[in-house]
Image 1 (cartoon, rainbow, N blue to C red):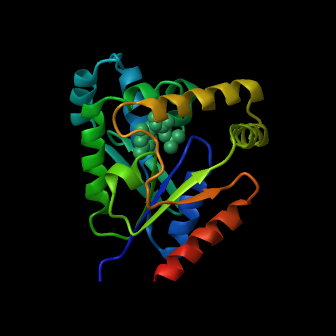
Image 2 (spheres, rainbow, N blue to C red):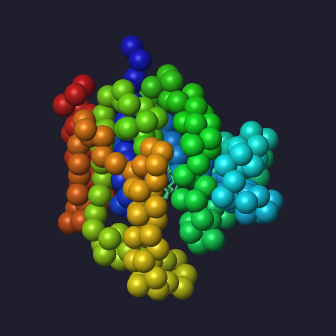
Length: 222
Ligand code: C5P
């Protein structure tokens, strides 16, 4: 039979991608990072000097841009027109502009179309903001993963420090709050828990604990 799809949504920095990747690995499912798709378009728009306030120009750009997620020896690479932009799309310039790109209805329609195409055979774990509400409303399992802003900023801060990167905790806190606000208050497909999503607050949970909870939900369904 057709394999299920698992939707994982939630605010910035809640650990969605780490958790989704691990769940996918356990189930031999494909992990699809939809945020990376919006980031790739944002990166390209900044590079090509396309105004990010202009939805029509962005959609023209998106239509002539190829964005691929490829899995290479356990790592997911983000390819933009066949160039590896995996690292570049995490730069703060991209992070701080992506919500302005993602608010355009035209952009979202095309992204949703691409994402639905990727999930049509099932067997995916997809993470983002609108997966349970808009991209895969009939996903068999929906998780809404949260944590307090302080905790999310703290984790990101630790991650930067452990990589030897400069980091400012207060700045991270304000950037994360700002992105949550933009993503939750936009008109089209805002960040929102689907009615049938199970909420997991990870503030006091480790990554393996969150993964374990989701796998339990999968097995109970199964
Ligand atoms: O998940 P990540 O933090 O990489 O997502 C980057 C941005 O892309 C989000 O802040 C949001 O503006 C946008 N996004 C979205 N819908 C999704 C995934 C991401 O609007 N499904």
